[in-house]
Structure formats: C-alpha cells, structure tokens
Image (cartoon, rainbow over all chains, first blue to last red; front, side):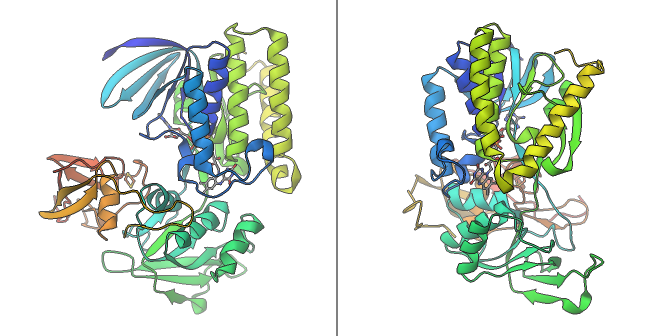
Length: 375
Length: 101
Ligand SMILES: Cc1cc2nc3c(=O)[nH]c(=O)nc-3n(C[C@H](O)[C@H](O)[C@H](O)COP(=O)(O)OP(=O)(O)OC[C@H]3O[C@@H](n4cnc5c(N)ncnc54)[C@H](O)[C@@H]3O)c2cc1C
Ligand code: FES
C-alpha cells in the first residue's frame, strides 16, 4: 500500500456538489483533493445535453455538460487536486482507502465531504434480466457520451424527468420511442419535458405497467397492461409492442455506503429517496469531520447540489480555522438564501419540507445528546 | 449503431479507430471508449451467460455496479466492460457457454 498523503479536505465525488464544495474550500486556502471513480469528472452533468431548468443565477438555459466544464475550469484555477479513476472504498475515521488507477493508496483528511450522488433503482418483472433491458442512465451515457445507440425501438418505464428527458434524447439520437409507461395515474415529470415528447407523437401511458418482456436471449417484445383500481394488472388489457430495448427510469437512491461505513446517524425520508445521513444546516453529519452534499443527502437537482456543496465547502474550511466566524456567517447566509429560492414554488415545496424535516430531526437528536452527535 | 449526426452535439468526432477481437471476430472500436460501447455499436448486446442457469446478460447499469456486462479481457475474467476502455488489439471472450460451470 502506498504511503498516505494528507489533505485539509478530501471530497468524494466530482459531480456538481463535490466540485462546488472543493472550489469554495480551496478558495479559502484549504489544500483540497477531489476523488472520483469515473475517468471523466462532472458526475451526472456530463451526459446531460439539454438546457437546464431553474433560475438564471443557477445557469438555467445552459446545457449540463457546459456547467460541468465551467466547474472544472474553476476548480483547476483554485488549485484543487483531482484524482480520476479512483474509487474510495473505505472510510476509517479520517483516513480514506482509495483504489487509484488500480493501486491502493490511503489518504488522511482533516475534513471529508461525501458528494457521491445517487444510483438508479431497478425493478423486476418477468424478462427484466434479458439483454436489452437497461437503466435510463446507462442509455443516456451511451447515446450522449459515447454516441452509440444500444437499440432501435424503445419503451421507457417511468415518466419522471429522467424518463422523459432520456426519451427526448433518444429521438435526437435517431431512435424510435414507442411509449412511455407510467404506473401512477399522472405524469411524474415537468410539463415542459412531457409536452416535448408528446409533440413528437410518443404516447405517455399512465396507469399502465410492463407486465413482462419476451424474447429469445434478448428483448423482442414488451407486453403492457393497465393497472386496475386494486393496483393489480388487468390481464384483459394486455397488449404487445415490438420493442427491442426497455429503459428503466424508476427513481434514484442516494449512494450512502461510505456514510454507513463511517457510522454517522441516518434518517429515513421516502420523499428524498431513502435513508440519508442526518445533517445540520452546515451540511455537517453527526461526526465532527464528516460533511455531505448533493444527491447523497436526498435526490434533488444539480442546482441545489452545487449550493449544498458550496455550503459544505465553506463550513468545512471554517471549521479548520481558515476563515473568521463573521465572514463565514455572511458567506453561508448568501448560499442558504439561494437554496431557499431553489426550493420555493410548486415543484420545490415537497423537497423543502422534506429537507426541513432532516434539520428538525438533527436538532432534536442533538438536543437529546445523541451519543455520536459531537458537533 | 453509432450516432453520427446530432442536432445538439453535432457530428461525431471520430477518435482513433482500432481493431479488437471478440470471440474470434475482429471488430472496429474507438480507442478509449468502453468495451461495451464498441460491442453495442455492432449490435452485440449479449455479454455473458450466468454460470448456473446459462441465462443471457447484457449492459444494465452502465456504471460498473451490476456486473452484468462482465467478460474475459486479455485473459482476465470478470472484467466490467462498461467501465473498461478499449485498447488496440484487445482479445475479448464472452463466456457464452454459461451453465454448469
Ligand atoms: C436525465 C437527468 C436529467 C437531469 N436534469 C436536470 C436539470 O435539468 N436541472 C438540474 O438542476 N438537475 C438535473 N438533474 C439532476 C442532477 O444531474 C443531479 O441532481 C446532480 O448531478 C447531483 O449532483 P451530485 O454532485 O450530488 O452527484 P453526481 O452528479 O451523481 O456525482 C457523484 C459523483 O461521485 C462519484 N462517486 C460515487 N461514489 C464514489 C466512490 N466511492 N469513490 C469515488 N467516486 C465516487 C461518481 O462517480 C460521480 O461522479 C438531472 C438528472 C438526470 C439523471
Ligand atoms: S453494465 Fe453494470 S457493471 Fe457494466
């Protein structure tokens, strides 16, 4: 094992949250390292070729991959060190075990910020393991990053923003989308995205699911069925589409393994995607050296991920004594205000309440003097 | 199939083309792209069969988490082809026999 290196702050994940955190920390004088298992930095941003929604301040109208590039340039200017093709697979107090380009190294950190994002959910139905059934994220990476279409005729399961956007991008790449299938009685994603694919003639079938996928050794057809009022498949309603590929866009779950390993306190929030590391309004967990930011703290958006990253970066630098309390308070207040704006409005409301619940839980547990809550 | 033209991304920039061998057949691939992308571009979607029941598997997660895309690369078994870049002359086998191993 290579001898350990020491950094003031180590950030795990080079997505929007991790890069923004590293930039803020490095700007304030922290020796900062960002580690990502991919060989391309940017996290989810690099496969997103659509113009982002949100406010002007949050670069709405800019395409995802351009935001990623801007963050990377800024990180380089601030002197952030970035390790790619480097998986963090262990976290033992303030020491991280990293498999970097095939070699084991350990890294010591004054503070650690986890910004590992989220992973796609899978769903099982007869035939769901056949080649040709893929995660929507895998499809998006193939078409937008590697410029390869994994099939010709697609059915997408899930009408949230991910399902809708990936369908639109499939059509841009020249594929045929036969249908978007949604078990819930209404479309999950934003109206603008749904309208775009409907205008292109793709039906969005609500109250419907995939009852099975059929094929000899690969997907050859997809059987759809309507769900009855009891939530069960109505066999009378079955019909078959001649698709060769099925995309699964059935939600994301925060990637929290390292936080579990570190042993910080957790909280269950169905609205935000599952079990999340509990954190305070500085993004600090129940461990005094461990911060979290972005989708790992609840699946939201790139814009909120960046702001949470900034907050964590500033707070971590402050806790290392790199800036005065008054300056830190002003910087953090500005970020928190922007976060509130992002979570306002009809789409942000649910997330705002779910996030507020996390802070309330944290306050409650720290008042009760939770064993590990040392902050 | 490769996406040559794109309304947002423009024409595909052709990287260095190299040759790799897959189950004895020579195929063209872009150096540095994931092996799985090169195979999908050729319409090869079955990457392996499960050892016990011989069920086919192909790319599922595309980010190195599910291992459905594992193949033997230059003699090394169980390599996740969705996160392993193509190098010229790679020899890849798919373990398509599966079952009863
Ligand atoms: C199809 C789609 C469309 C979207 N559209 C929008 C939009 O229009 N506007 C918007 O605001 N948001 C959008 N989003 C959401 C946005 O992309 C995410 O919320 C955001 O990327 C989350 O940022 P993050 O930094 O938390 O995580 P990620 O971007 O997921 O980055 C996490 C990084 O951590 C790395 N990592 C994880 N574990 C480890 C480990 N153990 N060791 C090393 N590295 C590790 C990963 O490789 C990854 O690079 C969209 C998402 C999708 C899927
Ligand atoms: S497709 Fe899941 S590991 Fe490669």
